[in-house]
Length: 406
Ligand code: EZ4
Ligand code: CO
Image (cartoon, rainbow, N blue to C red):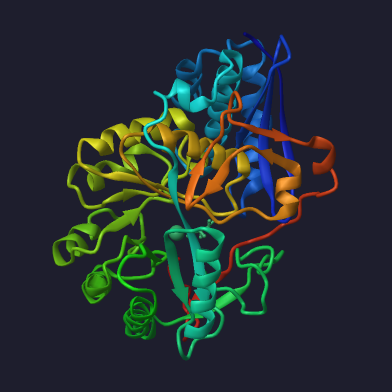
């Protein structure tokens, strides 16, 4: 099964997506997601200039060898652009292998370990009434776990919170812009406010509903420790990205001070980013996306390493992971023993017009479906109606104008 043709598809049905398409000599088509939010065209150039010329004529079945060839062979290792490009190739090869086998991909990863993958959605509001409406809306959609983000009194619009104009919340396209928007941030105001929100949510919705929260890397270790402690009475499923991710040692301080479960890793791209966090059991959940971590081949190995330390998965699943990347995550979710939860924000109708998915969401559980391969096909004709348009995440500044962490 030789690769005869390789091509990068760029489309923006609601937001930008980068998809690698591989075609074999006998006409099988495989897709991989290489979308890197706000830096999409860097991955396109990496693939087109430096990877595609190496793929034609290669044995499409040799997934491990191709991964090692692209990772070790380049000399320059890791980094989000490189690893997203490798992920696109890796996932497209897994799609091809599973299509050639006539099986859904999870069968090649060991088969089903569960009926479905527990998903969490993003509930948010500028104030409590808006937040409660958003939680109810998610429960009505079938979600059985929700992430909670709210506005902070005294601050304006902040990341992770819907505008409140009735638009569906996914930050973009509502907040997309060719020049990054700037938001104002105050960590002390945030720390005072968040525990009162969880108190109110538990009072309204009871003790059972799994609740999550994302700190977006904005706290110091001491601030994160204090927040973790303050949230202990509300029994969070996890507190995500509490401190900037480059410094794993920071989590030692947080970990020693609170039993609130910790999730880290959506900006990581390699097993080495996790080495200290896993071996010292400083986290409870691996947040990586298949798309940003070098694909299924690499993330599977991270999860096997994590399993030794009782650490489970909680893969990144915002709308900037394409349906191809989401399907790849779901096949792993179903196959892994140490699955924890899957983030699932739901793509827009325009996105799903271009990417035809076969995954399902029933009673709060996602399943990748039984179509051979990943179960996602790209309608290239439909995709041509949605050209690339630059869109950046907002930038965060303190009240005095200092650029702050994400
Ligand atoms: O900010 O996907 O937990 N989810 C998140 C996401 C990320 C975006 C960045 O591209 O933090 O919303
Ligand atoms: Co996050």
